[in-house]
Amino acid sequence: MTASDRERDRPAARTLMLQGTASDVGKSVLTAALCRIFRQDGYRVAPFKSQNMSNNSYVTPDGKEIGRAQGMQADACGIPATTDMNPILLKPTREMASQVVVHGKPYRDLDARTYRESYLPVAEGIVREALGRLRGAYDVVVIEGAGSPAEINLKSRDIVNMRLAGWADAPVLLVADIDRGGVFASIVGTLELLEPHERERVQGIVINKFRGDVSLLKPGLDWLEERIGKPVLGVVPYLPNLGLEDEDSASLDGRSETASAASRPLDIAVPRYPRISNFTDIDALSAEPDVRVRFVTSPEEWGSPDAVVLPGSKNTAEDLAFLRQIGLEAKLLAFAERGGRVAGICGGYQMMGQRLLDPDGVESERPLTPGLGLLPLSTRFEREKRTVRIVGTTAGWPGSGFGAEAGRGARDHEGSAASLIGSGYRPDTGREESCDGPTDAPGAAGGIRADTGLDARAHGGPEERAGNTPAFPVAGYEIHMGVTESEDPGLRPLLQLRNADGTGEAREDGAVSADGRLWGTYVHGIFDNDGFRRFWLNELRRDKGLPPAATEAAYAESRERAFDRLADHVRKHLDMERIYHIVQGGQEHGGAE
Image 1: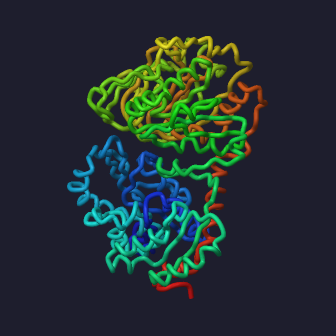
Image 2: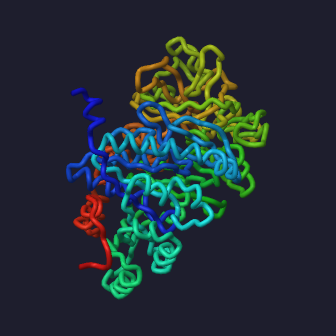
Image 3: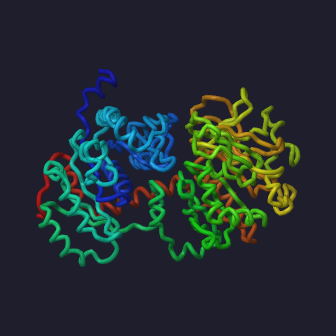
């Protein structure tokens, strides 16, 4: 019997579905927890979410794009992520419109009405086929719903909640967030709005994010079980400082800062713009014991940061306009003029440029947007999207030996044209592919904005560094569209890259100013690389007269510990014996026995 025969003859996987009384009740994290628990207990388990709406995305090993949450859940399962785990991803681009990504590749931008009326009937088949393939390959598939199953106006074309549960023959656990208040009303109200056959599919309730003494909740739980005729399978306490990524920007509203974080010596500000994407790039910084990360939304919150990180954006021009409107651009430019350190990733890197060109309206309705002018680059939006995992090393950092002297640039580096510093540099066109839209176009030589009076002397030069900077290995992924061109042939690339699967040519990515204080890259996950992250943080420590510090633990290892910590926490507070009974086909009725 061949492997394919064995796969075909394998009984379909058991399923369990988590649905919520609302968005952001913790479904993604609880799904990851159950995935890790089933894995710990010896099952081959996979996650599934039919349709995800998020600008936080993840690149699979074969270079496809899925929701970040499903990538994280696959990691919890200990398996490579595939597009079958999230066959449809919606990435909001502008008001009432999203880029529709199908099995990891962009399909087209659709407004909400067109998507609902024209595409959802097609999407049903895509979803059912993907789920079927997963069920043929694993023992258990843990399915995450979206939003609430009680959205009356959406139920007729539902592909994410109760209709999906029916296709999967999945028992449902209903998750409610007690931290936001009104938990009993949200549970009872959701169940009341379901059809009888949908209510029958709900096998139990999970109350999430509890704070306090659970014994004080007992009278309410007894009343609830009697009222709805279904058991409460657990009350999961809020777990602070989890160390795992959030799915979308709504979760940033609930991020709280511990007292110890406020006293950490390094303060990093991250502007939070409306269309922020892949802000999980910051998580590895937050995990460092000497780093305080603050998301800022107004000039009043700016404070006195040691560095600023500009994260990704799904609409770079509009988010840059937002920074200008609220006064954060002025704060940022004044900070850079004083010699402050600024790093940009993907859309943030694009903002650091001189101009953003979008004549065809690929990302926004602004044909020309002036950039921040911190690096001498310009970007043009194009429709073709690049998604790929990469490996490489740092290249042009001061003291790295890249070029014989400052300003020489990369023309002498392995024969490449270093003036073209984007991760998608194409030798045939002399242009660079850009990130999920635009790429930036910074200002004058040395990465200083000529029209703002920023002085290169504020950023010193390579001669200020003692010793040589080693080349740090890096790995990560790219998700971007468009092309970027350098406006200064002496500009140094930040990274030297190649595709992780060995395909394609070696290429350069990103840009770094002569003193290393201003840099940008298209590589998501750049701070997940332990050596580079600690090197950069030690540069910040050096600025403050602090001694260098060592990385206490590899980020990948700390993330694995976070999965186990989460699983242990959830296992302790859920009735796993009853959940296994439910997964194996048993029905749960009434309260605790």
